[in-house]
Amino acid sequence: MYGCCDCECEHESGLSATPLRAKTSIIPRYNGKVPPAFDALLMISFGGPEQREDVIPFLENVLRGRDVPRERLHAVAAHYYHFGGRSPLNDQNRALIAALGEVVKIPIYWGNRNWHPLLTDTLRQMSADGVRRAIAFPTSAFGSYSGCRQYLENIQRARAEVGDGAPEIVKIPPFSAHPLFLEAMTDRVQAALAELPGARVVFTAHSVPLSMAQASPYVEQLEVASRSVAEAAGAGEWTLAYQSRSGPPAQPWLGPDICDYLRESPRDTIIAPIGFLSDHMEVIYDLDTEARAVSEELGMHMVRAGTVGTHPAIIRMIAELIEREPEPCAATCCPAPQRPAIKR
View: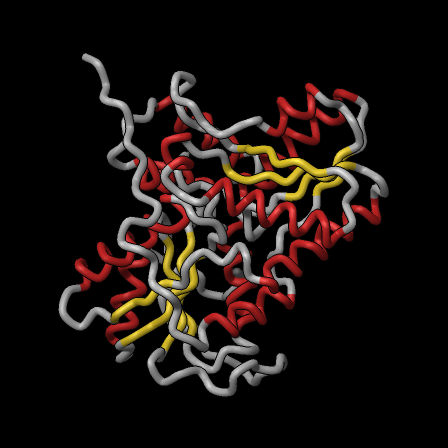
């Protein structure tokens, strides 16, 4: 599904839009105080079901307005049912917020695209709390329509629904080249190499339609980041593959698919999901379940590197990013893909 790669934390009442108040700092801050221009931090993520009964309503939310066959919806639902109907994404977002709460001196709010806490509800709470201008951290490091422009559209739509009094939201742009993101990912790859010395490294990211990739810096940013991490980690051989394709067979998407790549070249492999910030459903199903099954079938050793998650460097990165006014995205950045007309 478009955008399922967004991950993309643990807090007691995760369905509430109540802000999480920052605790005493335990990590040195880079530039002193947060500028008074921002009076809150808003984390925006994809969202995921919390229980089995949530799965179908959640997927219907994701697919609203799209001509997706019902059988495809139920096929994706089976991935969630495999893990009891609960996505790990919300818990991972709660963990990220808890870690940020040790560093960030302003209230932290959390809103999702597709499941509770929904972005519109969160903005209503922010408005009621008197928040006037917030900086938004989207849980997506790379530039594409679903990873960048769509967040801006989500924010604009939510603000319109809230109406007068909705806070201004300033979005942090994609951060794949940030040294602290690369440091965190390098640590994850080095840990995996320690488990399987000498193995090649295959970086993965969510596949997207070629029309989306060609209109954005997605592939270029992935290649640059993967090369930087591979060199810093001391990987002797690396490549980039994709996962989680969901479009119709006739529509061209980015490849190669990670499972196809493993079958074509069965060798000891470290899979490093650089395109994902946390170990959410598409990581634990597509890599830890499907790719691992392929590896075992082929008799090859496979180690999956961790995502950056709550690595201390990521916490420092976010604390640093919210301390300055971000450069706005260009008005033409990451446009929506042009889907071919349906012949009738």
